[in-house]
Structure formats: C-alpha cells, structure tokens
View 1 (cartoon, helix red, strand yellow):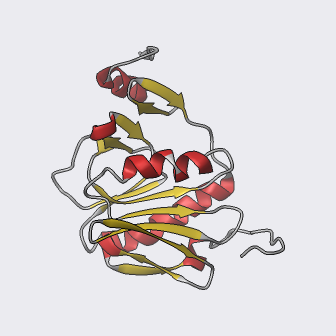
View 2 (cartoon, rainbow, N blue to C red; view 1 turned 180 degrees about the horizontal axis):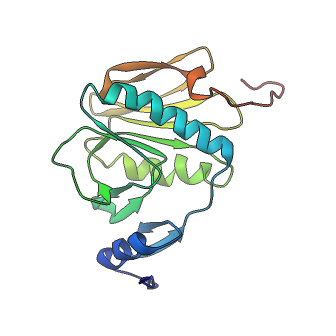
Length: 191
C-alpha cells in the first residue's frame, strides 16, 4: 500500500511515505521536495567514490551508504539523501536514516549545485559528528572540501593532480580516481 504524502507531513508520515514511495523526497521542517534523477556521469562518480571509501571502511569499521540512505539533521528537522555518506558510530543504527555521519559527499549537477553549496552546507555543518563535507564536480575534475578543524570549518579546492584526505577513514584518494571511466570535455581555463 502506498502512503500519500501530505502537504505538511509529520516526520513519521514522511518516513512511512519514503518506504513505499517510488520517488525520493528531501524533508525540511514539514515540507517535502521531490528529488530529480541523476545522470550516468553523476552515478559513476558516486559509485567510484563509494567504492574507494568502502575499501577502507571495512577495516576501520565504518559503513558507507549511497543515495538511498537518508541523513537526519535533528536541529533543522530535516532529512536529505546524500550521494555518499560514511558513518562510524555503531549506535547510529536507525533502519532508514543516520544522524551521526563523519563524511558526506555530494556530486554537483547544474540543478543542485546551489542547494548543495548553500542550504546543505549550512544544514550539514550542524552535525557535530561531521568532519568533512565534499562536493565533487561533474563537468570538470575539481573537488571542494569543507573540513572541520579545531571547531572551525576550512575550505579547500582540489584539482586532478591532488589527493583528497579523508580524516574519518584516515585515508588519501587521488582525485583522478573519483573520475575513473568518466570523460570530461575540456574547456578553456578549466581543470
């Protein structure tokens, strides 16, 4: 049976609707927003990223989730579907969401880049457990890293010859490996 999502559903109604629904939705303080489909390039970058993280996460031990596991930001009464999320707290074990990830990765697309850089950045930074928020470009080999250091957030931009440091997994990933199997059309002045 499908649950009809109400215009201003409660958290419980939202979670029930997401279990049976064919379309995923973000939930922000009683309002729901349908998620759009992702391109093949977006999916490949997400899969590459999750695969690289999973290799290390198994030995730590941490969990790596892709696309269908929600993150709950309790302070903002919000649920989002990150492209990739790493969680290392065994007590954070709800069936359909996590509340204490140490890493969130979003793959930027033209339709979501603004939301990922503003709304989600502001929201995710409220998670005390989060050490890194990483944005991966689709149209050029570039990665934006927001990292919590000594209680402050620092920003760095990486290019194709750089290595991405993942603090919560104590690992380095060459940026070029995030783009394995992906053709990027070069344009003047871009990486």
